[in-house]
Structures are given as structure tokens and as C-alpha cells.
Image (cartoon, rainbow, N blue to C red; front, side):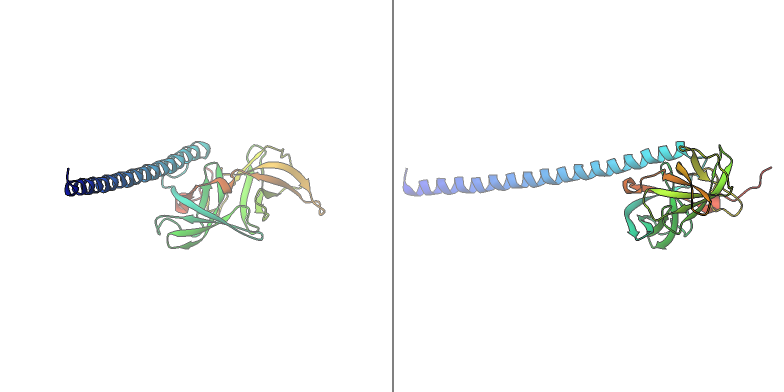
Length: 231
């Protein structure tokens, strides 16, 4: 074998090696792209499954609600002192209006405070300025549920000077005349009943929802729930 043929053979092997390495790189890139696609699909599927599971819980745990309830994605909580807000992505700029009730899978979490295009700011139940008409149907006790600025509790100021409320009693929306929400939506669960220095009684409520764990919330269209007097 002469020197020329040896050089040609070496060159051919080198070129073949380059082409083989290039094919491997291309195959690896294709595999990475496929893996990324599958991971993305899995994440999207997981998010959709979570959303559907939450919707099922919502439908089973709450009173009859409109089929026009819309889901919105939670972006982040926005706490500031005793102010408690939640930033949500509506997806559709026409999805929300100020004042709409916002639900988690197990109960009320607040109401829409501001709408900015496809995003909205929700005033949470725990906001220090939040007030909701509430009642304990099983005890026939009514009052106003106030936010305290704390993340894990509410205050239920009672209408009566005496009360039969007990720890574990559920407090729901009253749905009285002028209310923008229907009756029976869960607000919280009684932790304890206390008497303050003025002699006023009120109940401390635990939240139905842990806002920090929510990935989606649900908006009720107010106009679906016009108040109707008892027959």
C-alpha cells in the first residue's frame, strides 16, 4: 500500500467519523426535543388534571351554581401589611368584572377587586377591609364575616349578644337582600367563640381554603344570582 492510499483511507475514515458524530449530535438533539415535548405535555396534562379535579370537588361541595363558572390561573399572592390580594391570570380579558365572587374548590376565597386586561386582582377574605354577610344555618345565627389581615383566620361578628355556636360549625354566605352572592357558599369553620373587652361576642373562623396551595380559582358571574324572596 502506498503512502497516498494510506492518506486517502485515513481521510475517508476521518470524514466518516465526522459524519457519524454529526448524526449522533442530530439524534441527541432530536431526542432532547422529543423529551422536552413530552415533559411539556405531561406538565400540561398534569395541570389540566388538577384543574378538572378541583372543578369536580367544587361541584360536589357547593350549592347549585351556574354552569358559567370560569377558571382562572393563580399567578401569585400579593400581601402588603394587612392587605391580602391574589393575582390571577384570566386568559380572556372579558372573563371578569369587579365585584365577582371568587371560589376555590371548597369555598369562597374573595372577590374581584381590579381587572387589568387579562389579569385581575382578587381581594381575599383575609384582607383587613373584607366583609361578607354570613350565617350558621344549623344554629340560625347570622352576622358579618370580617378579614383580620392574618392569613389563617377570619372574625365572625354576631348579631346576637348570646350565641350557640360551637367549634367545628360551618359558616356560609347568607345571601340576604342586596347580596351579590348566593346563600350557602362556605366561608369558614368556627375555631372558637370569644367575648371581647366591650362584651361583644364573635367567633374566630378557620379558612376553608389554603390560598397558597391553589393553582386555579373559579369566578361566579354575579348576574346569575338575583336575590329571590321566600315564597
